[in-house]
Image (cartoon, rainbow, N blue to C red):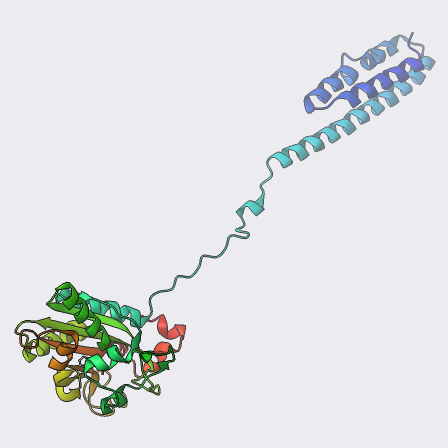
Length: 354
Ligand code: PHE
């Protein structure tokens, strides 16, 4: 005969079993064991029929409460388990979005490029290398002898006024200065060629030069020249004129003309000024070319015998020509830059165009 205490014991047993279930599978098994058709509680229910009506009513009520309590325990536990399993699943399948954020990866550095003047120097070298010239360099700080003396410009010669510069106080025996042109590199090359027995010479010498000039549309106090020197046998003024013409068309295109005007340089005889059609106005005259239609790019001439004497080359055996012109001026003319001062302004809007 079933007592109410037995029902309480069954509920207590069910409570423990339910608490011990950890997974959906376990709670399903526990539920069937403590509340299913074959459970002890179900058995109690089946036995009620055999009881007296009074007893049956009382026990039936207790059983009903017990089953409700057990069902509630099971459902409570099932909800806990489901929630825990869901949480575990979420944790496992969680996507860490921060993995996809660039975070502290540094921005790629912007790449610069060569300044227009440097690009121009390379283009000029290419033209001359194509004509068989070597490319040489010399120092930017020169002695009085290399910048003037050896170039047939003795001290106090009025021609020195054409090339005023900054003098460096490096002490005796010789005064030193920032070179005013690339012509002193001619002297270095000829001395080396004589010392090493390596004549003839066909070379261009690009580099930076300095003059005490006030900047304007066509002048910068720090600028660049490319010097040319040919020392060989039987070289004539026609070779010079032809070389200049070939260079002009190769670099500026067939529409730009060159002309040589008589001029004076102490280290060439005869001497000429090398001019090209102003590419800004195409010859009609403008502010950049001072209304002449021509732009002076540099000077040239046949190497003066006095220069050959200074370096120990026999002027009766060797002849040669030399030229020197502005690289910045070439860039200005080729790209139609009205005012050369923008080359040193460091304005990226200008520089990025080239
Ligand atoms: N050195 C001269 C100048 O800077 C140019 C030049 C070079 C002239 C070579 C003749 C020969 O003005």
